[in-house]
Structures are given as C-alpha cells and as structure tokens.
Image (cartoon, helix red, strand yellow):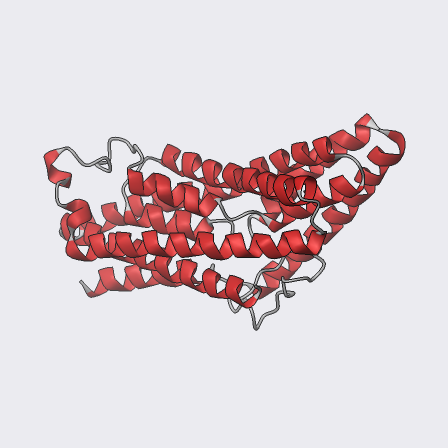
Amino acid sequence: MTRMLSVLGIFLFALLSAAPAARCDALTSGRNTPEASPTLVPFGGGLVMRLAAAQRKLNDSISAAFRDVRDSHSRSAIVLILGLAFLYGVLHAVGPGHGKAVVAGYFVANRARWTSGIAMGSLISLIQGASAIALVGLLAVILQWRQFDVLDRATLVEFVSYGLIAVLGAVMFYRAVTGRGHAHAHEGHDVHDGHGHEPRALDRRLIIATGLTPCASAIIILLFSLANEALPVGIAAVASLSLGMAITVSAVGIASVLGRHALVGLFGRVGIRAHRLEQGLAVVGALAILSVSGLMMMGAWTRL
C-alpha cells in the first residue's frame, strides 16, 4: 500500500509541475503574458525559456513570410508559413498550458486505449485553434476591435474555460472518492472497461471546456495576417499550428494511457487489489485536473 501511494504521489507531482504561475508566449510581445522565469516556472524553467527562444525565432520567420505574402503574393512564402506554423505548434504545445495536464490527468483517472489519447489530444488542439479563429473573426473582423482588446477578451474566455474545467474536475473527484465512477465496471457496462473508450457526457464536456481556451499564439498569427491583408493565409496557418499542437498533446495522452496500463500491470503482479488501485488513480487524476485548472484560472484572473 505504501508503494502504491508513493507512485500515485509521483503521478500527482508530475502533473502539477505542468501548471505554470504565468504563461510564456513568444508571440504576445509581453502583454498579459509575463516572460517565464525559473521563479515563475519552478519545474523545467530552463526548458521553457529555451522553447520560448526557439519560438521567437520561428515567429520572426513567420512574420517575414507574411510580409512577403503581402508585398509579392509569394506562394513559396505561403508554404513556408504553413510549415513554420506546424513546427511552431509542435514546440509551442510542449510549453505550459494547451490542455496537457487535463489530458494526462484524465487518462490517469480512466482506462482507455492509446488511440483515445490521440483522439482527445487532437480534438482539444483543433478546438483551441477554431476558438481563436472564431474570437478574432467576431472581435477583430466584425467589430473592428484593436489587438490588445482582443487579447484581453481572450483572457476572459480563458478564465471561464478554466473555471468549467475545474467544475468538471471536481465532479470527477467526487465520483472517484465516492467510488461512483467505478461502481459498475465489473458488470461490463462501463465505457472504460479496457475494451474501448467511448466518451461519456462528462468526457465530451471536458474536451470542449479545455478546447474553448483560445491559443494566444493562434490569435496573434490571425491578427498579424489581418494587418498584412492575408487573413485566409492566417486561418490556414492556425490550422497548421493546431495540427502541430495536436501531435504534442496526443503524445502526452498516449504516454499517460500506456503509463497507466504499465502501472496497473505492475501492481497487479505484486498483489494490489485492482479496484483499490483503480480508485486511487481516479482520485489522483481528478485531483490533478482540479488543481491545475484552479491554478490556471487564478493566472488568467491576474491578467484580466
């Protein structure tokens, strides 16, 4: 039992370490997104800073390519933008946010196939890109709001989104503690019975709530494309960015699914009762989602 609690503690520690006190975004030029530092990101701060530096270089290249599109309508510049946006998305999603902690916590709490990790990670990333497009389309294109006003409203959407995730995390935590989430697992009716994974209503709501958080970098790309009279290219770039992010977030989901399977197999071999381990993992996963979303919500509040 002590060994199981130790491993569960390591799971929780790793998940919570993904939650930053502030966001680091190379595209936002500092407004509402303080530069990350080792004091703000206590775990892996050096990695975050290196990722931010790499993203800034990609951002400069994307900006130059957008100017080429504006000045010469270069098709090669458009292809370059799409390729750089994809690479940017892969690197950008490694940093804080983007639903990785939610995905990891969810698959720690629930049995699923590895393909579910791909599905959930991809859906969240694509919805985040679509959310950014919708927000910029409404505020910047239709209402003609200024860039910083759009970013401020994006922060409000973030706050609401993280609040919804926290509520759903609390529901998961309550079900895990009371055992309601696993009450009928042995009767063959639970969708998380190891033979497949069909999203329940709670799962779908969690995906949507996480995806509603618009990616700030996607918003900036769209605003920059507007400034250079290349909005269709900007929308295509955000789609490419979202695909890149989907790869990283899906990888987190796959690793969480496989890690959970390995952990269950390990403790099964040493005689730990399966239902106790299942409930323990459900508690840890739900608590991680609740804690991380709460921290992210407070971070968004400080930027409102």
